[in-house]
Length: 147
Ligand code: RB5
Image 1 (cartoon, rainbow, N blue to C red):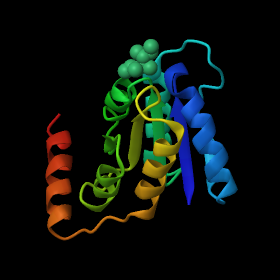
Image 2 (image 1 turned 30 degrees about the vertical axis):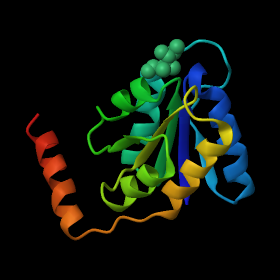
Image 3 (image 1 turned 60 degrees about the vertical axis):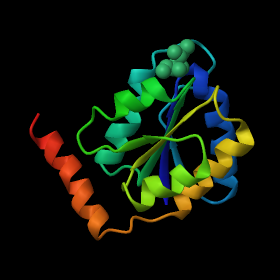
């Protein structure tokens, strides 16, 4: 599975840690930046990962900023993106199983490294269940189509 990752400076350390761990576990990774702790603007990186996902460059995305709020808002502006901001494992599993989330967002200043990695593992190990959940996800897409 190919994973796209992105963060601003607030999520940089968590991104680097998750990236290292996923590489050890054999995931193929694309790092869309940022590449240092220098202050940057999170919308750029939310959009870059989101466009990578909709273009099919990567299967799923993982994004972080300080809270995960701004970068998830930015990613969700890209048509076809369902970015889920999560800070515990249950929601990470449900984001895939019920919402078919294609991007996981976390707050680098909210979750620690170990919890962040557990959230990522829960997200990547879960699959969309379809059925009645597909009907609901299609209704989300229909709202997007009205814009
Ligand atoms: C940057 O200081 C911070 O505002 C950003 O990382 C994020 O938390 C915004 O939602």
